[in-house]
Each structure stands twice: as C-alpha cells, then as structure tokens.
Image (cartoon, rainbow, N blue to C red):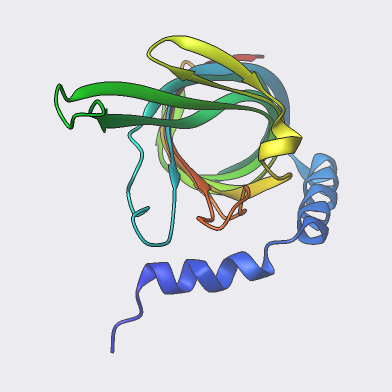
Amino acid sequence: MSFPINTYLSKLKFHFTRESYLILILLFSTAFTFAQTINYGIKAGLNLSTLSLTGPGFTNYGKYLPGFNAGGIVNIEFSNFTIQPGLFYSTKGEQITLLFVDANQQNPQKATLTYRLNFIELPINFLYKIVKLQDGNLHIGGGPYLGYGISANSSINGTNTSLSYSKYYRNPDYGINFIVGAEFINKFIVDAGYGLGFANLGGGSTPQNRVFSFSVGYLFR
C-alpha cells in the first residue's frame, strides 16, 4: 500500500510550531560547543515563486514570479554534515494572466496581475556531505524556515500598488526547505532549493508559498 508524500507532509505541518522552531534554535546553539569549525558567509540568488491555492477554480492558478533572496549565514561544520542557520530578505508571490472582454463580449484582452510579498526569513538547514572533495563537498539536506511578511504590493500591466501586508495576509509564514548544492575551494557555495510553505497566508483559498531558489554564496574563512 503506497503512502503519498503529500499525505505525509500534510500531517507533518501540524507538528511544525513556533515552539518546535525554538527548540531547533536551542539545538544549533548547543552545536556551537561541539562544532569543528564555525564560519560566517553571505548568500544571494533568484527566487521563482507562486502561491498554492486550494478550492474550486484555484488549483495551480498562478504562474511563477521571479524574485530574489539575499542574506547572511552561519556555517557550523562537523566531519560529515553542516548546520547552517541564516537570516534573509526574500521576495515571493505569484503572477496571474487575466483574460477579459468588453461589455459587448468582444475584443478579448490580456492583463498580467502580480502579487509580490516581501519577507524577513530565518532558515535552519542541515546539510549532509554526500561527496567530499579535496577543497569542498557536494551536499544535500534541508530544514525548517520561519518567515515574517513586512510588505506587499500588487501590479497590473506594470502599474504598482502598495499593500499593507497585515491587512491582506497573515503572519508568520513557515515551512521546509530542500537543498542540493556544492562547496568549492572551501569558500564558494552554489545551491538549488525548493521551499514548501505550510502556513495559510490568509483567505478561504488557503494560499501557501511554493518557491524554487538558486543562490551563490561566499564563506569568510
């Protein structure tokens, strides 16, 4: 009997609370004592995001919206794995193509509607070194993230409108990141990831963040 991954994740999200996130912070704080090396770094890159909506007429409604992520990381290294908390500014949202006609049901036209949500985000990633290189490694892993929406805006055909995040959306955002990447010359990082949001950001359509990310980083050793 198969056990669908979506069923597992839907159960997992009920156990993902702010209290459990605080426990993780305490765990990685303890890891400072036992780490072989601790370094600091910076990372930045591209986000391709959409909002997953549920309900009649909402499934897979939005297109992926280009954005960015930028911030700092702490690299807590052990022999075979790394704990990597960070603090990032991350833009997310979605892009929707609308089709409408005039009052006479003629002259169909298209419009592009964009919703952009801006977050301060705290991820804690656990990376396993699957292949050790002479001056680096290949790694896979992931971990939880907690985000706080600070601003939002909408635009239609390039005309922007600022929105109050707290009026239209809910805080906090939270979910899990999945990451695959590499470290070169013990300094440079290249990562690709996927962020699976669990939080209902507001409304009956239950919008949740879905984000593909690509980033590069540098460790100050």
